Length: 85
Image 1 (tube, rainbow, N blue to C red):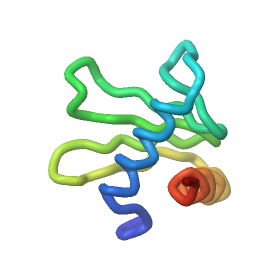
Image 2 (image 1 turned 90 degrees about the vertical axis):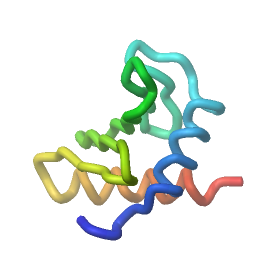
Image 3 (image 1 turned 180 degrees about the horizontal axis):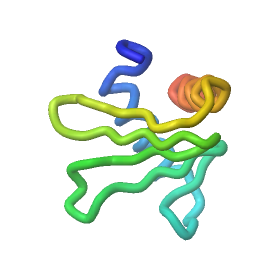
Image 4 (image 1 turned 180 degrees about the vertical axis):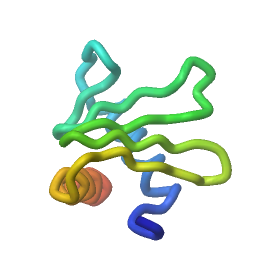
């Protein structure tokens, strides 16, 4: 999992989803990914394809998923959003 994503990319994708996404029950939804944060905004979350990414202090992140395929689908969506203008 190490080095699959970097902190700048995670935050850039989070911001794009918040800006471009539609309001949903859990947060903002865009291109198959939902973005939300904890109440104080120090931890941000990206959720989709059966994966939950938690990003917090010191540019640390954790991916929760059951199947490798889910992680691969999620990372592809993150990459596609990151590459949008």
